[in-house]
Image (cartoon, rainbow, N blue to C red; front, side, top):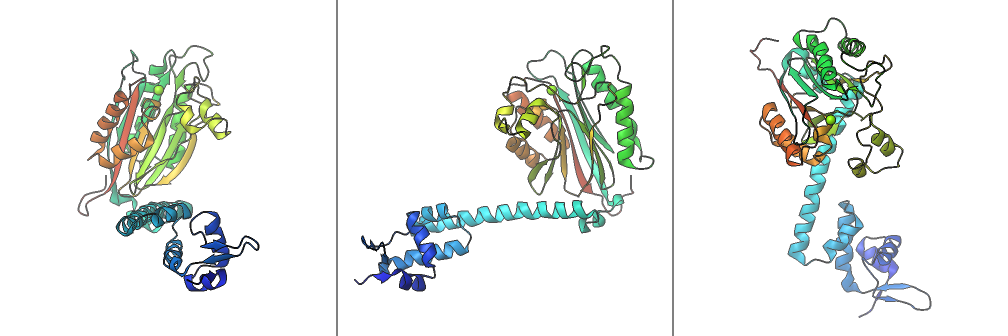
Length: 363
Ligand code: MG
């Protein structure tokens, strides 16, 4: 059979000569013959069928490595591989669509969903609990969930339990009624006052010796205010995907940020407990703050490191996806941390944002 020149083969297959040279280099579509003198490539007409399949798979956006897998399979298995690839694409697309929508609304501040959700049409269902875990003798974690506030605090050092409880107590008024004035300012003020009034800490104690972390979400309708200091965390489950929106103020996180430690190595680092910032009575201990917009269907999780250090985020995500309500989510997450050894106290607070029935009064 007469071989085709690379130009003729390119025209008939719909692939460019440049692409054909690349696919040869990758072993995906080697020519039938390469002239030993000129290096000129020639192709067998019988190769056209595979070349056209490669061209179509490229138009589908399939990576070359996966195309090589498809080309190595018999027809029924190749069809299944293409179907599996497309299912992956659709799942990825759906997750990115939700993220793009959330970012658009976040950046514009006046998103369509945010306006449609309106302050008086959202309500929150919530639950919180702590557990001593399986190793520690005392529980220094505190968790709170109420109609307008979600908070966790992880006390450490001598008096850490009292520090955590005092900080949460100081925030309770935010849970009971609409904040006078700006919500984020009210939250910041409450945290600052709580920090300056911290009881029971040894004189001169600083971060790393005694104090408490705090991660708190206060909300009014669809508007959320976040205050965060330490290594407790805030997560959002939206559209089935889990997003963390706090940054740990810890020594290992700094090493990760500087590229000196891989994220997977942080949990086992000997100085993993060392905090760079916490509420410790020092006026310079200032939390990160942020405003966010809640959507109906959002599920928020605040947790101490007793959960996040021992339970992989994929497992946290799956537990949040499956739980029927916030109370079930909290209990399941605490169970996961204990099943992983429960080396530390565990605090979890979960809130669901739901649309209020049309006839129900605003709370
Ligand atoms: Mg802890």
